[in-house]
Amino acid sequence: MEPIRKTRLSDKAIEAIDGMILQNGFRAGDRFYSEHELAKELQISRSSIREAIRILEVRGRVTVRQGKGIYVAGPGEEKSDLFSGWLKDNKTPIIDHFEVRLIIEPKAACRAAEEADEESLRAMEEAHEKFLRAAERGDTASLVSSDGDFHRLIAKSTKNRTLYYLMKTMTRSLSEGWITSLHIPGRVEKTVREHGDILAAIRAGDPEAAEKTMIRHLTNALADIRASMEE
Image (cartoon, rainbow, N blue to C red; front, side, top):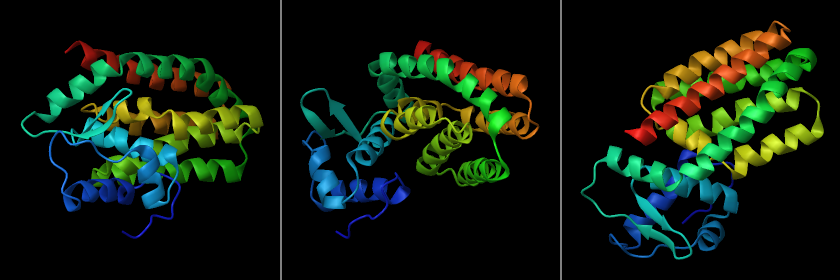
């Protein structure tokens, strides 16, 4: 199989792993390749493999058993049931993810409104446009990556190196929150509007509005996730 050259998650990474399941004769219940083996085969980072596996797990294509490995999932379950099970199994890291973001990101948006230059604003707008195009295509992998890019670029625009690297780590290695929220019905459309509000406040140079719109965005996403967990 031809290696994938990009270090970020893309549709090609998910398609390649899905293709390996079909082409290499794996059946439901079989143990699949490890993250290390997949990273070596596809020549992409372990964090990108981990994110691809999480998306495939949410879709019901694979299951990850703690301490045992990755297994090919069986047919027969509805996607909604599979997603509900995934939410239940990952409740703690998902809630932790949003609690940390609610501590960090509102102040990042506030600082971005004060510090962002025209180049930073264009980069955020491009990430927002990429998210819009992915939403129109129903491209989940691109939605996850462009959502992460948007939040990472807000942190970068503050010109605070430590803050930027914290967000870079979260978007590339701790992606449960992005993956989870973007699989909840209606959340993509809400995110489009909420990102637009955040971007408008930052471009207007309004720190208070930028902070408030970021709090609203993250609080709404977490509320939608909690509601799905309770269904």
